[in-house]
Image 1 (cartoon, rainbow, N blue to C red):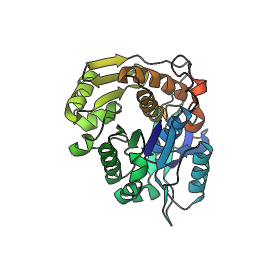
Image 2 (cartoon, rainbow, N blue to C red; image 1 turned 90 degrees about the horizontal axis):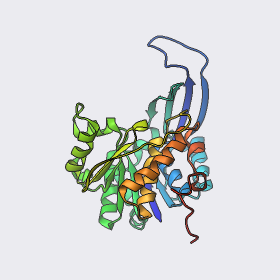
Image 3 (cartoon, helix red, strand yellow; image 1 turned 60 degrees about the vertical axis):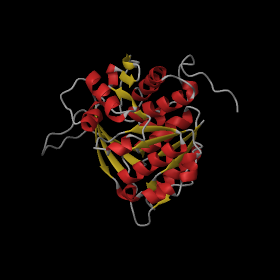
Length: 306
C-alpha cells in the first residue's frame, strides 16, 4: 500500500490559554509549545503509522526548522527525497491559539511553501503515478495541488482531496477527485451555500463534483455521500477532548488507508472516526497521531507481513 502526499509542512507554535484575549487586551498564564505541523506532513505521518508506505512532497526553507522536519520524516520512514528547499526562505509557521475548551484558532505565515510550483510536482510525476493513492490539501499553491491531482487521475490511482483551508476551487480540478473530505465550513465555501443543512451540503457537493464525499462534523460524526445516497456515521467519543488540532488530517489519512485496504467508504469513515478520537484526546499533533497497534484491533487489525 503506497500513498503519495503532496501538501504542507510547517512549524506549529501553540499557545494554550484559558481564553483568547479580546481586542486590545493582554492576558497572562499561557503555556507555549513548538512542534511539527502542516496538514500534508500530518497526513503523511498518520498514514505511515497506520501501515502505508508514504512519499511526501512539500517545500521548506533553508532554516533549522527544515532540518528538523527532514529528521522527522526519516524517523517515520517517509520518503521525503523530493522535498524542495527554498534558499533564503523561512519554513512555514503556524501560530495556534488553543483555548481550554479545546477549540483552536490558527494563523499561518506560508514562507517557503508559497514557492511550491506545478513544475516541482511534475518533476515527481513518476513517484505520484507509482502510488496506490494520492492525498492533497490546500495549504499549498492551487497550481501545485491541481497538477498533483491531474497526474494521479492520469495514472488511474485513488485521489483524495482535503479541501482545507477553505477556498474556492475550479470545477475542472474537482473533477479529478475521487474522495473529498471537507468540514462544514469548507463545504459551505465549495458550494457557495451558507444556509443549507449538513445533509443538503454533502448531497450538493456530491452532485457538483461527482466525487464521493465525507463531511466531517467533529463530535457529531460525519456524513458520507456516494451513489447509494447520504449516510450518517456515528462519532467515536473520547473520554476527554484536549486538542482538536490535527484531527481532520488524521481522519483523511485513515480514510485513504481503509479504502485501500478494501473498505467501503462508510466502513472507512467509521474506522477513521476512531483515529480522530484518539488524536483529540492528546496534546500536540505528532505525539497524538496513533500507531496502528494503539488502536482497537477489531477496527485496525495488524497488517500481514510483507
